[in-house]
Length: 118
Ligand code: SF4
Ligand code: SF4
Image 1 (cartoon, rainbow, N blue to C red):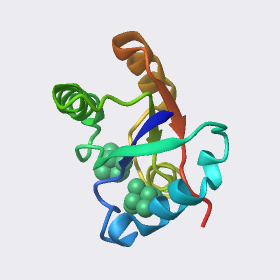
Image 2 (image 1 turned 180 degrees about the vertical axis):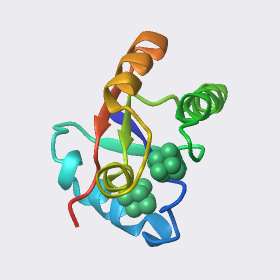
Image 3 (image 1 turned 45 degrees about the vertical axis):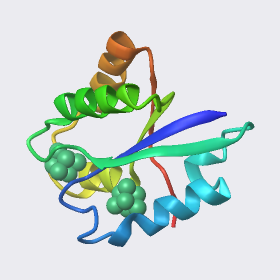
């Protein structure tokens, strides 16, 4: 069993991509970036990045603290397709490689860039 957290763009989540239905579908059907998992997956957190100009690390710290406090820590963090779009088409300041390295150093977790392809 792999436990997953999804982090989305605060400016897009539930504003332009409504109710996170696309990511929930992809998780439940193991499609898009979730097709990589051979074992069962469980979505245990679905939150946002903490807003511009890039408050994702303090947000991930809080997410992790809460997950551990309720014994639901996760193995992998997916950055939502909304974040990928914000980076490609907007002015999102997030540096994916830096986030990956910081998450690895601080919590020994993997970061996957992307979620669904819908
Ligand atoms: S890409 Fe995923 S996390 Fe981002 S807003 Fe859409 S459904 Fe939610
Ligand atoms: S930092 Fe990037 S992902 Fe977060 S709200 Fe701003 S544009 Fe969206």
